Length: 153
Image 1: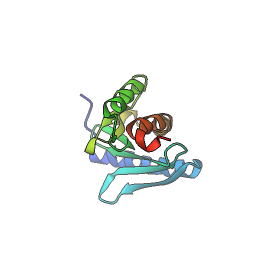
Image 2 (image 1 turned 90 degrees about the horizontal axis):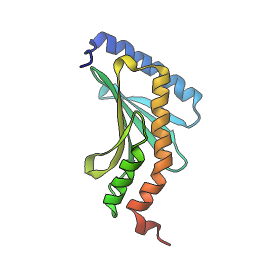
Image 3 (image 1 turned 45 degrees about the vertical axis):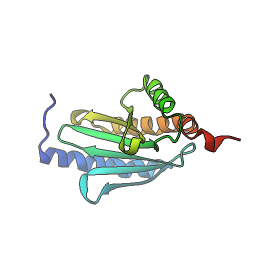
Image 4 (image 1 turned 90 degrees about the vertical axis):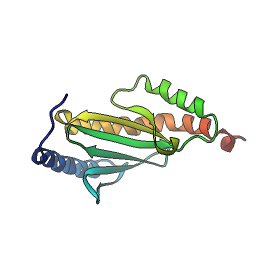
C-alpha cells in the first residue's frame, strides 16, 4: 500500500498543481478555464475546447495517496447501450493511465489515478493530453452508436 501523505505535504503539492494549471492555461490555447471547487480545496477542474466534442472538462482530486482524474465522455446511450459499452472497453484496451467507466446515471466517463509521489508537471500534462485526445478520438463513434436514430439521414 502506498504511503499516506500528511496534510502539509498535500498542501505543498496542491500549490504546485495551482501553479502548474495557471501556466497550462496561459500556454494552451485550447484551455478555456481552470479553477478549484469552492467547496473542496483539493478538487480542480480544467475546461478545454474540443473539435469533436464541444468541451472537455477534466476533474482532478487530490487524495491522501493518489491524484484521481476523470472526465465525462457522454450521457447514457438511448439505444445500442451494450454496443457502446463494448466499444468503450475494446477501445480502452490499449490505453495507458485511464480507463472508460460507467458512472452516475449510466453515463460514460474516463478515469484514472496517480500515486502522489508520481505527480509532476510532465505527468499532469500527459494526463490532460491523454484524456483530451481520447475523448476527441472516441466520442464521435460512441455518440453515433448510442444515439443512432438522431444521426439517421
